[in-house]
Image (cartoon, rainbow, N blue to C red; front, side):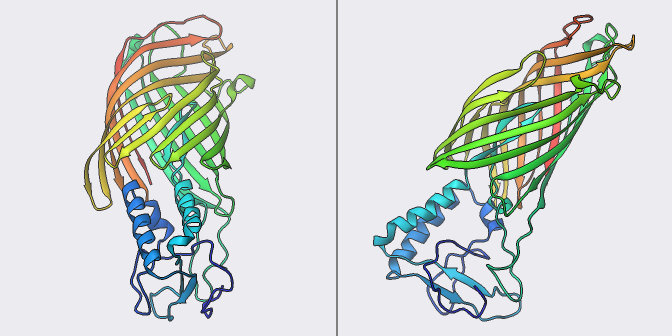
Length: 393
């Protein structure tokens, strides 16, 4: 559709919308919502907008129409106005289904596990950029860098108590023309302090790339597949034991934007744990509470404050940490070391506009173990504390 169009030839079935709700002098209030603006809405704001839209559409007397905004500096060239009567509820249902679909949770990662809890960002899958000659027909970029995340974790300790410092950096690549597909590369470096009684290398490395696809199976049911090939090594032993492919397969049932159930399997490819069932849920009973009962990082979150688009959340969390790395022992023989522990934490999360956020957390680390495939040098370090901080932008 070009900027000179004044009337739609076919009923409008989708939105090419460019800015928050506005009033236009030539007609009634029009629902205009950009993808960037939409990604910042909370559940209650989405519900309020749907209620407002329903009221507006029923008050207009029905029909589909397209309005053209006169071209002016710093103004959009075109927007589409979606109108219906109360008898056209099926079309409204279609719109609500689209809104609901964008709220389905997607998987991220912590160590070798799948973690559910990151909202699917609609702006990553469809982006319409207005230009001088077109709106809907403009070419969309086929690939874009969506986000970057960094975190650092410190477990104090020395000698046989085994301290470590872990640095993790990753990113997300989205494909606006291929909905529900993303690629997430990451690098993790683990620097060990000790132990004296066994010869764990001073630095362990993990390089991995996650390929994730998410597709609707039927109404309110989605399938999600993630495959993560990677290398876990001290860079001295780079044989076949260093190559590790992890992933998960999930079915997600989303009866509402506030509740999602997850069922499936997680392939860890660790020496101590290889395959686990994945059953859990995320539930937001209101805008101030959120429950994420998903292994390996269940959390309970409570919103402490909200100022415009800035939010501050406190949370309690548990975590199953560790991983397996291919290493070279002090006698030049190849082996595989597995670090394992359990963690209980409390933390604070700060959400900012444009999907930016940062966090800090602290807690205790217990039931720690260092195990080798050879069985030589296995032992259990003492419990310690944890301090972690990170950011996403």
